[in-house]
Length: 342
Image (cartoon, rainbow, N blue to C red; front, side, top):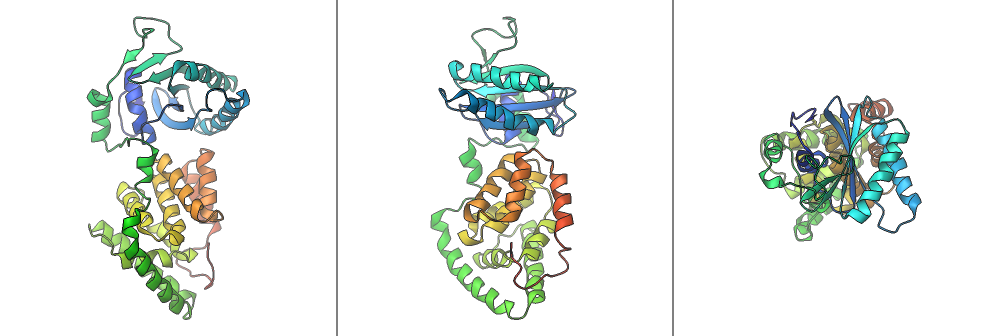
């Protein structure tokens, strides 16, 4: 099988185990389960979840399955699934069978159940020792052609979720300059608001366009520029303009990750949400979810992040969400009232 967009060929279970971290963006830890949806021998979707701890009530695993099934079903048409679990046999094998049965009961074909334990992969659905020995099949991602081709294709497999979060999470030692710059930007914004909504929006247009252009030209924003941009983005039309002007490519993901990482905590929700939406449009669901969660960690009522996270959890494609927000927010070229915030 192959990954539909990046044309990576997966010829064996070992190849698939090597490919999974590139599909989800990081190496899954023990206790993870990954459901891979295929369409005519092409991988079109992958969803990861955390299995309940060993000894948990049975309904916890059924609940997880009930959450995963509709997410995968929304990716139709799907021809079959491969489900991969990570960890020890006693914990993973029973869980894989329950989850597999849950998908089969809905009419989805489960082609293979695989367990990855350390550097070996085991098949629960193949009993032919010639291709699936009972002692497992060893695999080494560092020497795999799949890993090499994935890297060449621009795919990244970070060590764990923490490594993904580090892209947009602030380091305390870097915050002093931003705090001072944000205080100045907040005072500047208060003065600007006295001139009305149009003045705020026009300043936002200048700041957003300039910041994206500066990044595209290879220049890093100063603390003052980051602070002013994030303060202006508390005005919803400015944030919506940022959404509209941001392109779905990795360079703009990197840009919004840096802005989110450097922003003063109180002003994180807007850039984090733009980061989440941009990552989602680029196919990086893990980064999208984590960035939206970061926005809601600061402001649990930040509505765009709430809606985005709901869409991500239900497996909707980015196009559906983009159509929804286009129909519900005004044209960003038309400023709204001075006090309109998220």
